[in-house]
Image (cartoon, rainbow, N blue to C red):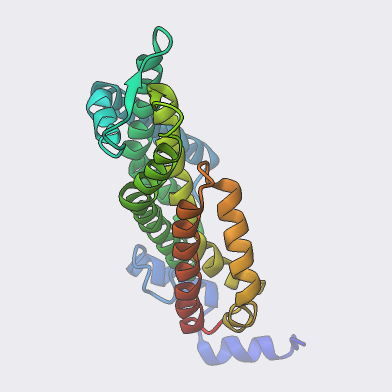
Length: 271
C-alpha cells in the first residue's frame, strides 16, 4: 500500500513534480510515439464525428465508383466466368432482363472488391489510434492476412473447384438431357461457390485470433485433429452449393491443409 509519508521524500529527491516532468517532455518532443513519456491527447467528440463522416463519405464514394466500373465491365467478366464451363453447355436467357440481373450481380462483386481496400484502410485509420501497439499489430496483420487468404480461396475455387463441379454436374446428366443453363443461375452458382470457398479459407485467421482468447491452443488443435477433420468436411458439405463429392473433397482437403498450417503461427506466438 502507498505510504503518504514517503511522498514528500520522493519530491525532495527528484526535485521536480512528475506531472511537470511529463509536461516538459511533451513540450520538447510532443509527437514522438517512441518517447516513453508520450501521451496521446484525446480528440474532441466533434472532431471524431467529423472524421468518421469524412471517412464514410470517401468509402461510399469509392463503392459507387467501383459499382459503376463493375457494371461497365460486367459483360466481359461474365464471359470470363463462362469460360470455366464445359463446351457442351448452352447458355440461355429464360426471361427478359436476366442478363441485366446477372450483370448487376457481377457489378456488385466487382464494386465491392474494388472498394474494399479503401474501406478497410479508412476503418483502420479511424480505429488504430485508440489501440495499443500490440493491438495495432494484431488488427493490421489480421486484415492483411485475412484478405490474402480470401483471395487465395477465390483463386483456388476459380481454377479447381468450379470447373470440376461443372464437369461432374453436367456430365452426369448428359445421357438423359441436353444441358442448357440460365445465365442468371449460372452466374449465381459461380459467384456463390467462389465466395464460399474464399470465406472458408479464412479458417487459419479465425483459429489464430481465437488463440489469443485462450479458447484455442496449438496443443488442443493437435489433439483434436480427428474431430476437426470431421467438422471441416461437414461444413464443406453444408456450405458448398454443388455438394458433389469431387468438389467437397477438394474444399475439404484444402481446409484440412489450412488447419494443419494454422498450428505453426499459433505455436510461434507461444499459444
